[in-house]
Length: 488
Image 1 (cartoon, rainbow, N blue to C red):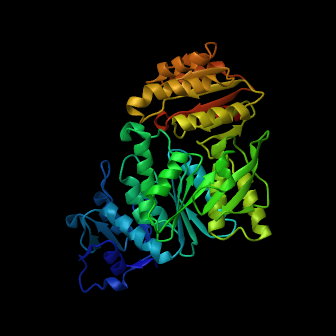
Image 2: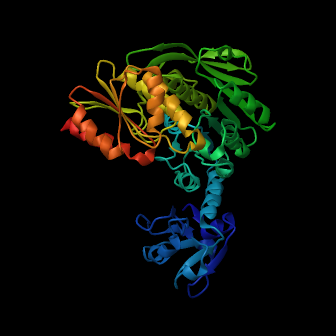
Image 3: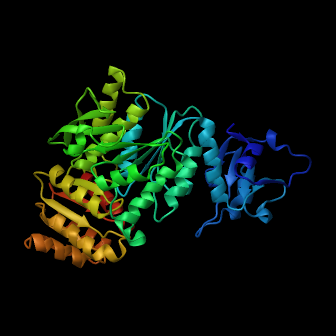
């Protein structure tokens, strides 16, 4: 049993509606789970009739009751059938979030929340892998980082969970503020500030302010860890953080900030960074109130660039804050978890088929993630003919033209053999690329399907192919088709 129905009613600030003959005691109704989908609902679960722009859960209330829902949460009394129990609320989505907030404190576990322009999912999965070496961890599944997804993540946590790790996405001001007040994190993380959503927010300063909203929900004594290689972000965080919270600096670059002199009680930095054939190796150094200690084992990650190192440092930071770095055996498990973490499919995963090497980084795209993809592909595809399939970067607004041009310049700085590109700003990409390397072969394509056809005509056995675009271009499916073809 997760809750009694009376407990739910109080948590969501609703009122009980009974269409059952006879007396109903809400304290005696047991809720054994939460459902928002009649296709997967189980008997005894509480059905939330969520309503949005493109869906209305009220239409499925009768089906939910038929399938054994113990009660429903809805904003529409008229949608509740005879023989059913309901909790009536103004907004079922908000009620779901209120119940998640209640359950978060009922569990009594630690909550870690992650946001940032790029790298949220990679950082979240790295942290989850590391903490799983010594704790019972529940984490966001897939890309469920909006209010519904995050609430369902919390509500699906087993009762014996010791840590919940959630990811917070946003598309405008106030959204992370809402999410963080539901999750109430003990530890918050900002991976970076980039250009994602700049078309909506208008400037990187506005994006930084939107990401900083994560601090509004920090528990008393909570700590926020930020990318201190971005000194503007770090200084802003120190200035704006509430007095009863703390800042930790994460330093992945070889800079003066790596020596423990940042104005914060805790710094974790990387030293001895070296590139290898498979990624990067480094050591992690902890500075606590000016005192230096080193994680005793060398660490390695299977990707290149500062972001890959920083993801690992965020994970080490969380392991330290959760108290699992003390024993030699767990230190080895932590190092192994970091060393074994490969890229996630759709976010830089490498697949070596019998014919091609495929890098699928097509889940999303922004200027920063494009740069990371170019860097990693250039190194991972060493010895292969390097072919790129690129789509556009969306939600950049008035900045789209200039940022696609800059991305073209970045692309042309590497030794790529041919680029197939599509999207509304393909011309700006080509313009920027040819400013740097007029000899780079770039083929403008009509759409994703045109790219697929041209790739099939061009690629040959032994080639390496990078797929990178914003999600709506559908490049993930093209990457999957070439993986299947490569293994055929």
